[in-house]
Image (cartoon, rainbow over all chains, first blue to last red; front, side, top):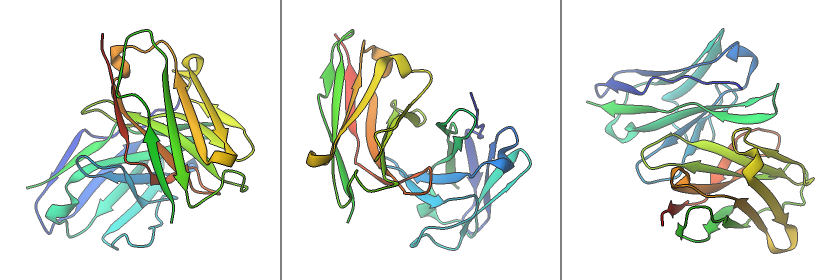
Length: 108
Length: 120
C-alpha cells in the first residue's frame, strides 16, 4: 500500500517560514491535500490539489508537489498556526485514501 | 450549511461490534459525486482512514481493516452507518465522519468526532 512519510515535528520562530514535507513514491503523480488539526478539534483543509487554497485560508499557506516530495509552506508563522498537519492522497493504484503520519508544528 | 455528527456508544467491550451513526444535513447522498467517509484517530496518534461510501452506493475500505468494516447509507434519513466487528483495545479512538467534496478525494467538512473506548 502507498505510504506517506512526514517528519514528526517542525519548530519555527514567529514570523519565519515553516516547511512541512510529505514523502511518497512518485507523489508528483498524485493530488496532495493538507489538513490542519488544532488540539481537540477536527481537521480542516488548508491546501488541496497540491497548491490550491480553500476560501478563508490565508495566503500564507501554500503547497507544492514535485518528484517524491510534497511540501506545505507556511509563511510569516503565527502562534495560532501551532497544530498538527497531515498530508493526504487518494492512491489511484489501490483506490484507497491515505494519510501521512502527521507533523506537529511548534511555534517557538 | 453542511454539518455532520457522529453518535454511538462511548464504551464497548473487547470482541463486541461497534456501530456508529453519522447524521448529516446540508447535502444529499443521492447527489452525484457526493460521499461520506469515516476516519479515526487513536489518542495522541495520527489520522487513519477507514471507509468511504459514494452516492452510487459504491464503497471503499481500508485494506488493513476491510474484513471487519461495513459501511452503509440510508439516504432517506441522511445517515451513514459504520460497523466495526471484534473490537480490541487498540481500536480505542476518536471516530470522525466527514463529507467528501464532490470531484475531489478529500474531506471538506467533518463532524466533531466521538471518542470510543474499548475496555472490559
